[in-house]
Image (tube, rainbow, N blue to C red):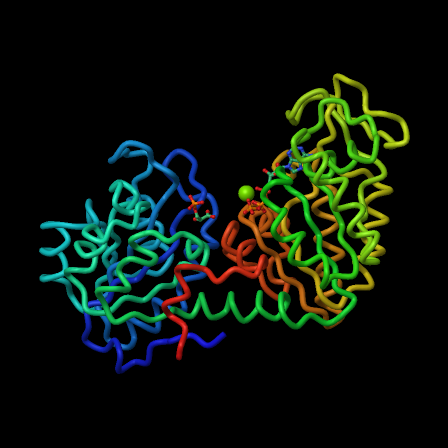
Length: 397
Ligand SMILES: Nc1ncnc2c1ncn2[C@@H]1O[C@H](COP(=O)(O)OP(=O)(O)OP(=O)(O)O)[C@@H](O)[C@H]1O
Ligand SMILES: O=C(O)[C@H](O)COP(=O)(O)O
Ligand SMILES: [Mg+2]
């Protein structure tokens, strides 16, 4: 997949609109994880050094009714300023007068951060009039928001119709790394899935089942599969309407010679809280009705680590347990350790998924993976084999 990437001369002296994904986790108005912001710095530094005048546009969260201060990008603009030392100016709108004025008086080294583009309904509808408004003050568009590229919105897709458009370096990095795992993996190739919902991962299972050698399933989604196999899962997460699907997948994998590995033990507790008594249960013994499984147990960690140890390629999406709480973190931590070992041994390891990336980051393993994708839904859709609408128009002929 060859992308149109900008040269210095394409952007020098130009007013450039950059679509970034500043949809970052925040608490009390402060950015708590800036991985996604840092991921754009290559592109932004290159564009600034090439003499472009930059305005950054992004969404944050999913605001429902127009302007809503809890979804403002102002704290993110402040974070970017502190992180880079650049002159960063936050603009309280993303279209109209205020933007036009700011762009007209913009200094060359100044970076404008526009307000949340989802404060306008035209964004998610990909309304052409809104896209035109958004594009109006600019000459060039650089799409760098890989993690929003699965959305055909005005700021990811629509503006391309009005501006000379390019893909940024983050998009290229993501596609090169994910593409290698999707299309040209070295074997053994192991898919590790976890997280909360089976329904989010169906497309990936279906696209990869014919390519991988083993599938490891942990996290909340494992319990739908375990129930499909007849285990008592107590009040663990379960998608009843996906039980049939889980059965079919278990059968399909058997007929294809791909093994699906499920937990054999779990850390269970009465509630999703850090201060409730947690214990380990062997899954041969049913999980009591009033208990839920919140992490994989030590035997499962051992089994999974051994399988991962043989891998040459790993794609991992979804944590093994509720890693946000200390008592349920070990499964994710030990699996991260096993995957990091694969990288050390020369294998190619890719992490996809917002929470998985956050977990790997929090546990200090990010620089021990070949690639940590910034994409959640986008990396999954890419792995499903879809052409992402935010990238499709940026492919070189
Ligand atoms: N056994 C479990 N029971 C309940 N929740 C779980 C369990 N295991 C993991 N989780 C939760 O799953 C969530 C992450 O799942 P998710 O599928 O969103 O992963 P992800 O990496 O963010 O992928 P994506 O970006 O595609 O959403 C975490 O918040 C974690 O607490
Ligand atoms: O967090 C993400 O996966 C991206 O920023 C896209 O956000 P969305 O799912 O609200 O479109
Ligand atoms: Mg998630």
